[in-house]
Length: 307
Image 1 (spheres, rainbow, N blue to C red):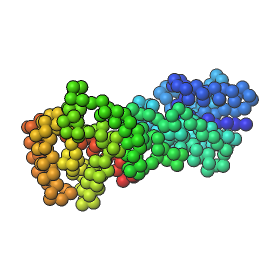
Image 2: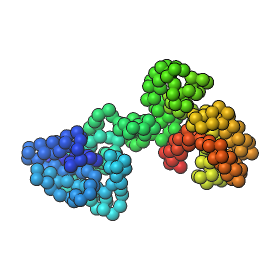
Image 3: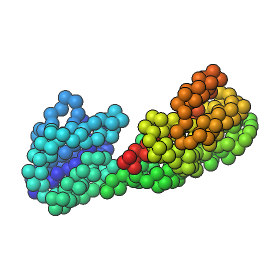
Image 4: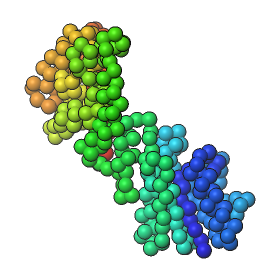
């Protein structure tokens, strides 16, 4: 019997899934069967070899996203040549390790098309916690059919992940222990800043950022111009704690008023007026850094929808 193990990460990369796959393959060979491991290319390692344990290894071309922690398969001539060699060996059974990798999704679909029996083994928490609430939410919502692309679902998952910690944080804040500008703003006004945005499933992105971006694009704007319009809309419609930190409540209100004024003419503000506002904000040492973060999420969700 030939068993093909698909593992996006494999030795010499250190990790539990890596050693687990190696042990499965090693035991397969020891039992008198044939083991093939399909993994990701690593520097200075051959794309095809048989190691000292008798395990045949194929290393597919990848883009090493997140410093190689999240390898993404790289289609092309070498990828197609190597995968043709793998399937030509007619595996009797496939084991796919950890569902969130692009290689895992590709392998599961390819095996299904060929009618090869297959087992998907998920590990750890069921998703990849990437140190980022948005990417973590996308990981949790990933299914064998592919990623979730609906902004409402992704942002709702962000809220479910963030709310317990955020609410506990706000409950513990007092005038005595509030130090950064965002904490002081909450104590003084009840504005919850970025933590409140995350806990509330980023309502500003869903109700302000994405609609403003789409409206400008629908009017013929390019991505950069539409992003500028979305940033202005977010600045006018949210309480940016970075503006508060730099200019106090007066600076925050000034930015809200002037950003909103530029959008009164329509979804595509005058470029010269935008540049004039930019110069004025620099002179006042004002920067809508929090809204820029919300704009990044807006762009991410827009592209997730395949736009």
